[in-house]
Amino acid sequence: MASRADNIASSLSFSNFGKATELRQRIWFTIGALIVFRFLSFIPLPGVNPLILETLYDQTRGGILDLFNTFSGGSLERMSLIAMGVMPYITASIVIQLAASLHPTLMAIKKEGEAGRKKLNQYTRYGTVLLCAIQGWFLASGLEAYGAQSGLQAVVAPGLMFKVGAVISLIGGTMFLLWLGEQITSRGIGNGVSLIIMAGIVAQFPTFTGNLFSGYSEGSIGNGTVIGVIAMVIILILVICFMERAQRRLLIQYPKRATQGGGMQADRSHLPLKLNTAGVIPPIFASSLLLLPLTIAQFAGNSVTTDSTFYSVIQTLNQYLAPGQVIYLSLYAIGIIFFCFFYTAVVFNPEDTAENLKKNGGFIPGIRPGKRTADYLDYVLTRITVVGAIYLTLVCVLPEYLLRNTGFTLFLGGTSLLIVVNVTIDTISQIQGHLLAHQYGDLIKKAKLKGRMR
Image 1: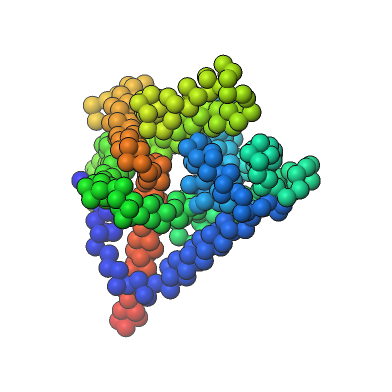
Image 2 (image 1 turned 30 degrees about the vertical axis):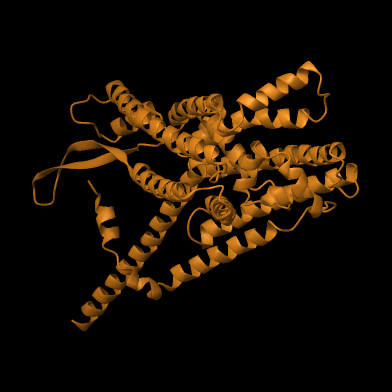
């Protein structure tokens, strides 16, 4: 059943878009900020030879670097100033969120309201700088070592000064992206960090489209494959849109209260529980954990002799954990299901929700307040999380299997489509909110004018 807000939003007329001056300014600001992000992705790090980078990167494809490269819009492949993207911030944010739900001190800070949120955001920024420094140092060191072993030197002047300069540049690039994301959130449309991630993913679309149609023109991809891929993308988008908006609405009833007419009226509301509470966190975590051993094995395989036992172990690991293999897909599905339940349990606490309802006098009809309500919420949340986990697993694993067998990838499968669709839905909802506010503002002005004429 559609809510009242959905009914109002569906009746909005986009003909008033031209009259909403503030909304147009916000949209233009967002577009300009994303253009700046794309320009930065083509500025290489100081001391790096960009002509050799592509050859070195081609030798490490299939590992976790592809995950980071997609989210950064190809910045890692070009080793630009924003090669790390916003992934360190996302990792730090997830760690702080998990710690705030498990550690008593951080949990108390979280309950302080706006002041606590600002303090946790500051901790997240400190963690982002630390992660950028660590990852930047290993990235610079690996670039020097891997280039030397391959006979290609991508670093013009290897040494301590290059590493320090690379770390400082990478930290500055990531923190600038965070500042740019905050500006988009406050002065533009949508969540800034999410829009930057989506822009990086969408920037890879021409590459995928070119590979698809070049394969078709060369004869390596048939007509059925092209039609099947396009149909699969459309079906995936429709399924994701439907499932991401799906929710289980629990009826909440409050005690009867006296009205101005002398009667008694009972207030009712709904507690919406999203079918996919965990969002895109489970696929990102699961793919990162699986691709990390493969990437380490790829780098380690270049430093050992081919007739050693360790080299045979590395080759076996690369063979069975390669994306698209049965073992890889099975572990990927298990990881998605595990993180679905784990992250849902972290972000939604049935006991706290039941306690808040009890304090406000609310209750679920037929369920006693307190522990019975918490048990019922946990029961319902577990059932819908099962459906959400199955949905995420199918969306992420099936495209991975089908596309790997055709010889190319689609933005890392369903994970990237999940991010793009989710961010698009959120952005459209905010645009509708601005249009709705503008429409109400016009109605209020008209009402005031009529009141003055009287």
